[in-house]
Length: 266
View 1 (cartoon, rainbow, N blue to C red):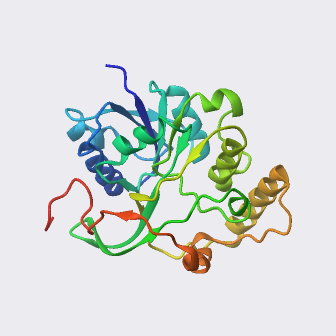
View 2 (cartoon, rainbow, N blue to C red):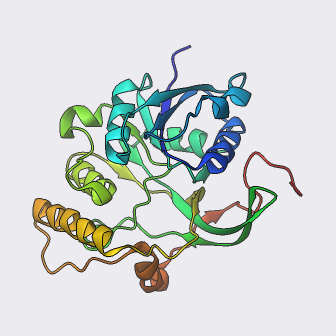
């Protein structure tokens, strides 16, 4: 049966996280989807999919280089579904995410939901959630041009969007997602329901080396120039998150701290 949704997941070396993501997909209430694991020149991935092949329509596509934007573009081109769902390999979805997102797409071209930012510890080779908080902000077109509160993980949209605006822009690299949403906003209908069904891993401090920071600055300047944005300050996600907390919105929350696909105590 042809899949309705194609889930595109760039992956490099996070094997345990990717396994947990696949577990979360096995308990989705809507199951007519395919999973495309885009291997970004990392270790082999087929053995990670093997335990799930009786439950998931999943395949590994070798990208041949470590370039996450190019991997997503390749995934879009390989997708058999009419709807694309974007995911990072360390994030997860609550069980009703696909079902609810498809309902929203009946009235929109792109839908992205709120998220739960979760922190974790490693115990017995698995992630155990220690705390979480909502990442929930109203969709404001003007504010979005100055501060992106768009988390691409879990985003669902009509694949035909790419026929109009093209693929993800590899030239802005770190800002591919922000750039994509701004381009979609100009031509299509966006829905942002107050429903936190994406689990976004939020450990670490996002510290960058001087070389990485210099490269990110070039991509940021390219992004700003492309969209005519002036007087913009480049900040990392962890710093700006502190500044946003004053305008968090109320959202539907169902996450209890147990990662989807597990049972209590695992």
